[in-house]
Length: 413
Image 1: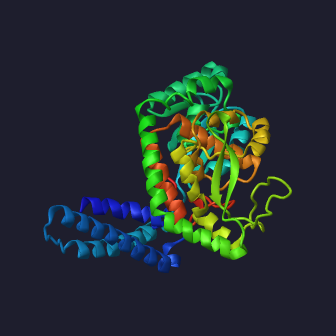
Image 2: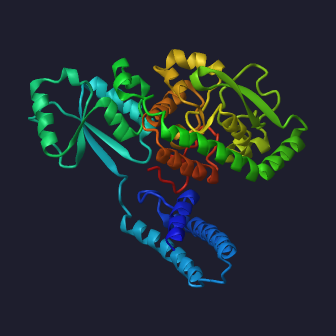
Image 3: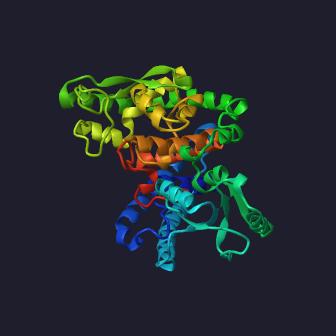
């Protein structure tokens, strides 16, 4: 029962049943919510059937806990009713706001606010300037952020000390980015920040070895179980235009070393006759079958072999093409830091930011990659995997402008 309850929560999240209370009213989308609840129920029942079969095969018993089926049905009904009741209770609620006092100049505050636009992720941030201890401190603040700790005057130091005595967080700019944004905008990081933040300090030891073993085992497993999907997709690609099914691209890997990845072809064979190009919205080079493959990310399946070879990991920064990296390294500070770990099939940037198709997008995605590098753990990898499954399930794939935070009925916490 406990396992099935956990399965209900995870599958509900993957299917997109959970939404922020301030989203458009559920009553406008009740047919979709009902369908998602039925789908979740069917998937959880499938888990129950598989578990029952395994239990019967191992123990050779005839146990049949018949109370589980009506229990799951009631769970589905009450879960749907609970969502509607909560939506009605918070009918006029506003999105959750985190309010921070900022010790900075007005120009620095404006610069910070412009960088926040791609980092809101369903949770609004309100920033107020803080000058000294004489300022009236709002009751609903989360804490204070200091742009430059070396430029504090005596009054500001006293004011921040009073905030700390009240139990509020007082954070320097880099740590505030980590806590409030879950990313590190590269424009805000200095060379000194890179030294003490230690983006490369926790990628060795037992966790990295467990990660590598998990990468190989899971990649081989996925290659086997997705083989029918890969063959079907390959057949459809060939039937559409009678051209090559796979194509290869050179990407930058660990240490910036180039390697080849293979993908199912989703564009016309002449897509880059004029040279490498960024993918655009409504890109006419994408084929009809390719559009479906890119949304569901099925075109990425052959890259699992790169994971087995060791060129990639399942989770990490997405590998970029060397042609584009020459420009990106010139325009984005600290860009080469992402080469210090093995690139990934999915990553923290992929589940938090839309598909990148410009230098600005690459900079925003780097901010999330830096967060992943500093906070790497097996648990963070598992979280990214769950979010990736949800992204694929809701067809929020490799299309510019579609992110997990923008999926219907989605949360991103």
